[in-house]
Image (cartoon, rainbow, N blue to C red; front, top):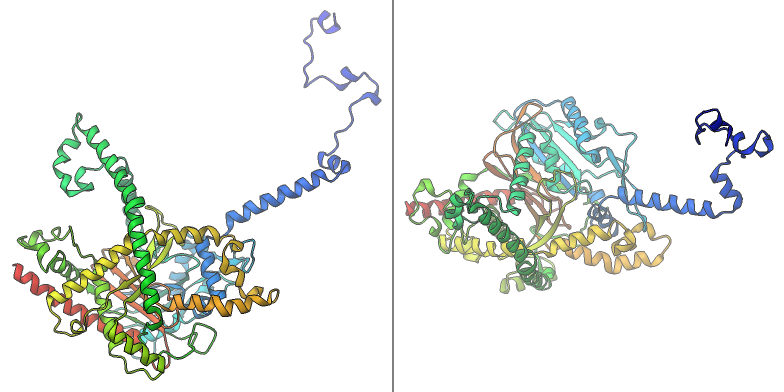
Length: 634
């Protein structure tokens, strides 16, 4: 028996037992001092060192992939490098907000606001890094020299400081290029604007499309206003409603008005569970049908029509300018930096509702026939319902067709041939319209939009006159509604978004990245292939539509920023190819307004302003005809 057992002592543990207990008192038998494992493996060979390098490389790769900007963000930068469409120099890829204010806002107010904004949206203090690589995409990195003061500019209008002077100055602001070594946003404060309604300040805020799509950009601007908390609450309410809809927990009438008789039974302890189960099954069956079967059928049909219309009309599309200068493009030529802007008056939502009520349904007045005036608000919801987008697009198609028809006879041979063919076969009016794929509740500043082409039918020549009849306007609105309905059901824009988002993050997988100008020195065929094939194709695609047209719903009531009321609010999408227009429709405080921007081409100045004026006149005609229909129903 050991001594510690004889003495009644506790046996030593592994922690407090000295080494001499195992090795004796001979120091030579003591365990060696543990050597560094890394040093030991390095002494044995290079295996650990190589594995360590591989592990570090894998870790760095994962970290880089995590920080790489989205594929659509990359797309805007790649597109500007491989074609003459150059948003970096020509500033045509701006998302722009124009706010007129009923009071004084100082430069310090704007700076303090954006100090808070960058905490909510960190991209605003970051710059682009890592451009031009094939195996790794560009990333956003914090700018060590970031200072919001470097992004806020103050200027004044020349006398008389009215709307004409404001539009001209905004055109100059839109003409500024971008410096990719700095964060891609800026604010211009105009401090002396007067329009007769005591509006004395204007804020023009721009952000490069690489930072965000139009919807995310407007969300970031709402964060600076008194409306953001209410907006966030509405988003959360809508998200909660959507989640309940998926589980069948909403009242039956909110799924379909025809199910309203089931509402009392849905609250019953006996019948309620069965009704909610039925509603959940109905929701998912409908979603599957729309997403897989119906969507694919309509998507392929719409895609085939779009391709056919493009092939038949791209070569004979007429711009709104009197004579599109030969060779004009978004390259670094003398015309690159010149843009023009115009904003419309405010159109009352009540007038738009009158048009909806009068022209919804299979014939004028059908949607409100026999319905008392006080109940007409919900009467237009149903088959053949005309939406705000249908109204705006129908009026815009009228205006564009009228401006093209009023152009002087072209002087070039190609122009005369084009005009002769178009008289016999009037071309469709192509508009590029953004499509949001933002999930409910997503308030991030990211690119979550794709685009598609909508080919609106031109109105009959006679319908362009001011004596257009009610039936002619009704037929034209519903032809436009049909085209927009096809566009809404198409899944191809979402497919292309996902594909670009996946491939463009790794440039080697994205063919456009192979032909960037940075590779010209190492591969002489890059420039040749780009000039002979890539640039002509992309330029043709970008110049084929008349305009980029987007509609963004805004606050329904007046709001403030820096405790000053916003009187009017306009928003602009990016522009497509040379000679196209950017048209933004934004609803705010019971009204709808248009903002239009385009190239300031020699000999074609004032196109944006003329388009606004013609739209106002044509919209008044639609309202007049709608009132006639509704008066007959009374």
